[in-house]
Image (cartoon, rainbow, N blue to C red):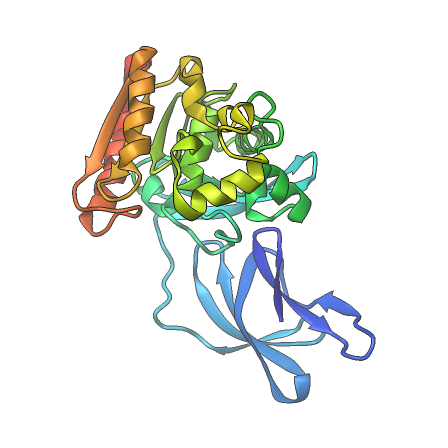
Length: 335
């Protein structure tokens, strides 16, 4: 069987009679997926997924010894970046992420883009490169950190995140993401004077919380991120009612604490807001942009016609180009 260990899916062996279990994957810097039992439980077959997404099919015995079964000829190395597993401490345990740096673009340090994934539960694992190579191709180092709402630190920490414990001024996830940036800086590979952040969906909501707190970023991109939880409807509103301990009318302070729009006056960095016409553009994008403009925050609001919560086809590449230009323009203006 397979289970998460940090951001890595690993192989677990279990003795049926005693319940004793142990990790049997041959290494720690890859995920093992598509695990299937072999003859009489003597081995399993699995696909080893490296940090860059390169895949190899292996046969692994109970002692962790691996033999390559066959090479997936459809799997190719991405030559645009090199990858490393990054770890950093938090109050609840050790967090992990993946740092990618460009190949063939000098020795750095490079400007850093931090990309926050959506989901958030179990939505990211080692081998999921996301847009990391695309950022490297555009001349940035890129970091995808994991955060407690994913479940990486266990259920208690995950529910703390969903309840919004500590918000707005003692935001545990914001602190952990800032700690990830510091850990990336300690590698000597990134220039923390040029650190930027982008997030999609839950990651976009995190971006909106980050910019209303102390943080190390020079500019931010919110892609389909919530700004005012009180504008939610349907099942999403019902879930938030449970996590907030009541409706917006019953618990107004709790809802305000979890809604970044209430603290638009704290935002001090330029923000690019990106939404799909049929996603969260109405009402979150409009409300967030209006609040930022009211408080004099440099911001731009882009709506992709016909798109929903995700972008399709060339629009995704267009978003990355827009974001890279947004980050560079901030650096140039500062220079």
